[in-house]
Image 1 (cartoon, one colour):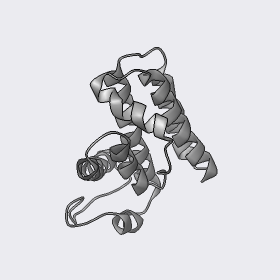
Image 2 (cartoon, rainbow, N blue to C red):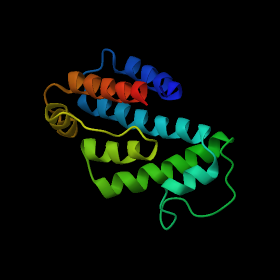
Image 3 (cartoon, rainbow, N blue to C red):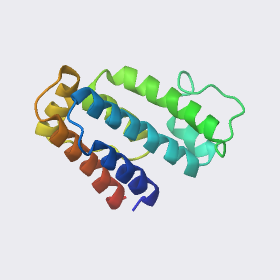
Length: 143
């Protein structure tokens, strides 16, 4: 199990409680994915991070220290921004970022459709967000 991921997922699952606004739920999912990326960066060596990045556009070579929170936040922002932009929207965008830290995987069609519809105020957003977070938790437990 990736214990570091479990703690991040649990903290964000608690943030979903009582929320019904699809945009707020989507923001929690976005923050979860970015927080997982930051937590992953905290545990990796820069050489491992560079191995999964596209240096041409994600993080330029430079003096980064993964023990510094500000550097991890910067690198995570660059990776998430570039990969999310390339994937465009919804679950595809979130999964593109999760792939970086080894937590991407299959998403059932009904969850995918509901999460994708969050930005348009779709029905079932609280349940879809909770199911998506549960999927990420399962992936962390299997790893």
